[in-house]
Amino acid sequence: MAASRSSSRPKSGRTSARRRQRSVRVTVAVALLAVATVAVLLSLPTQSPALLSVSAVTAIVLGWAALRIVWTEVLQSRRENAADRAAAANAYRSLFTERAAEHAEFTTAMTERLATATLAERELQGALVKTQADLAAVVVRAEGAEAELATARARVGELEESIEVLRAEVLSGISVEDLVAFDEKLAETVARAAGKHADEVAKLA
Image (cartoon, rainbow, N blue to C red; front, side, top):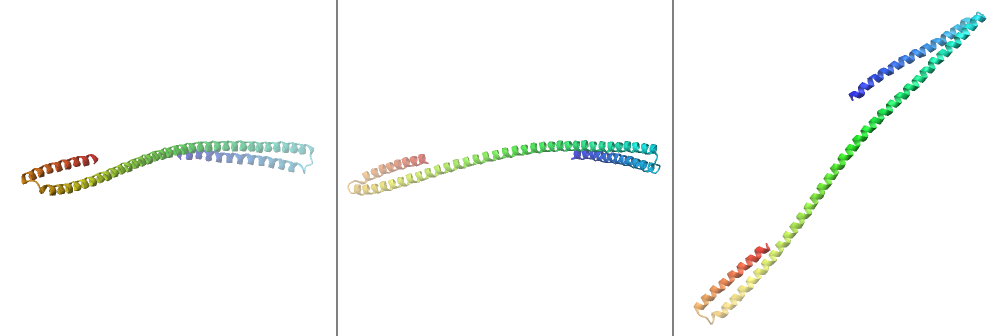
């Protein structure tokens, strides 16, 4: 911003100098034409061939001098306008190049951020799918363990019913000692079955 201000100040100074120079040249050209006109007007009443000739030559010379001055001013104005247009074109080209570089940098940064966000989203989706799969596997295992436990409980119930029936049948024809020995053996068998069932349940869990 400071550079643009500093560059605009000399430009405004050059513009004012050009205007003053142009004003001086135009003034000189008008003055020459005025002198030529006055010389011709003053020589007409005299009707002197010498004065008329001198005034005519003077008017022609001053007229061409004024034309030369004006033409020089026109050419210089064209050159200055062309230089101004070239400077403006260069400034616009520089500004366009700078804006294009900024746009490319911004586009690259946004593309990288979008790629990073997309990658993070995919990773989160993969983690979510894996977690859901693990949860489903745990649920399936829990359901299987519950089914095995229910089956084991049903077997224990059937075994207890069989034991009660067998005990009722045996009580009618054995002595007390045989009954005690049978109860101990039966308790040992039930304990073994319960321990085996507990091991199976632990393996399933």
